[in-house]
Image (cartoon, rainbow, N blue to C red; front, side):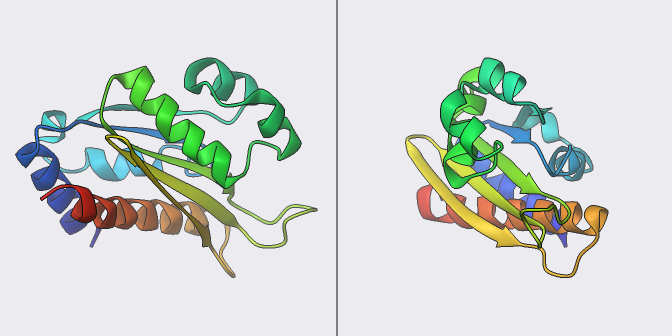
Length: 159
């Protein structure tokens, strides 16, 4: 299933001479791994970054430190800022960013993520819940949802 999704993403990005980069926190490189399994990815995929720390997200992706501290780096705004920072860091016009919790914590009882997609000057974002999933299952599920969401967003912005 993910191969078909990435193949469609590849086709749209190539047809629009667009480039993609990824920043991941809770998905820990899963999105990049899925993309990298498709032949010819270098035609549209520039690269990605996996970052868990506030300092790295701040330095490399230019997220707002005060806001990020107040939400433990997990919010829709952080995801959106990560998507913007990813486009700047990699000099691309399309990005995906994820942040969230891959497993329950003291404060958060259910794994969830915020996914942000930036396409040119438009930013899309949404929350995804990974109900009744273990860590790796949640990471893989959220990665698949992120790529599906990217494809949806591309459909509204590019042909």
